[in-house]
Length: 425
Image 1: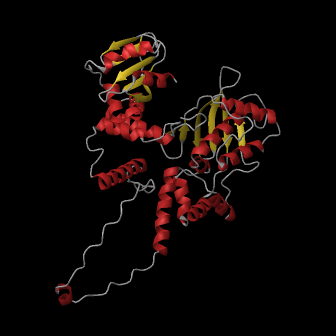
Image 2 (image 1 turned 90 degrees about the horizontal axis):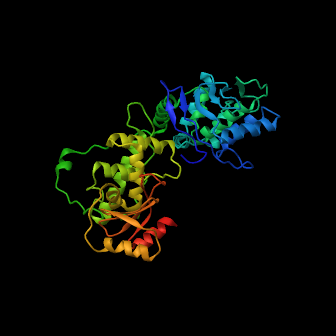
Image 3 (image 1 turned 30 degrees about the horizontal axis):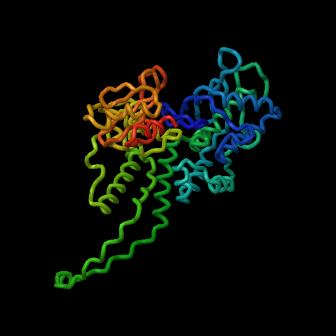
């Protein structure tokens, strides 16, 4: 999870209750906007319209930045969380927002289904301006305006709102940044229900707009069976420079997980492209564990998103490993591919030669003394380690002082001095 990112949601017993884990403290830009998305900033502006006391709002933002807000639960019409203040016992903070009536939802869903771009944006966790404008033209207000938010807190502060509710509101802006369906849930509808209904309405719109198929002309049997000359097949199309991008798959009743379908489609495209260009399948020889590590390594980890964290949990469960095992293996894969994973998991006894010459070379470069064990060289009592791979390269590892918890770091190198220099640098 990136600093300031949105936590993962734990689904409730139905689609109308979502609980988001607490996030750790972060350091924010006090002069910059708290939310990243325009709809998250609109939420913060609605909060700021509640109070003329800028001091309470500033303390609420400090509470949110400092990790004082516990798990946040979102249900139709309300957001609830416990906020740690100056006393040992946390306060129960709550924000209420009016839900939309059924007639408004009917108008809103028709507006989204009529324009495929709106549905695609929602599936990408975006809230386009055009969608909000279309709803506004129909008299439906999705985002809160001045006076829409109704705060409540168990603390004795009679501020409107108090700093605990302000902290909850700032934290809610983070949730909205990553998932606009949180706002739609507060307005009364859950994500699965909305996607099911949008899929049905979108199909109806497409059927109404599809032109009627003209009748196929008939062919006499004698003409169909008569001998005829068939021209040669056209030349195959040129191979594109990169694999194609798979489509976005909506979450529909009875269908497979969209994330799993996305991975299958992306992998199939990459393997087909490799077969067309090289004649070889680069993934054919991988084990189940290696393939799981490869898939996880293909996702960005500069702040794990909720989707990537869910993928890590599913891959770890499917392979009988922990998410920590998977994260360490991903670091090794990114360090050296399948060979990097082999270096992480399989110690071996290298023959005499480059391994035996490594320690004198390190000593000549004024590095501290390293203790050998199989293909490992470890700085006794330190935090650095080198591992020699079957590819005759040295792989750098680090651990916290006094801990035997080694993690792959830096780029492997045939020269142990260069590998250790990159590790320390």
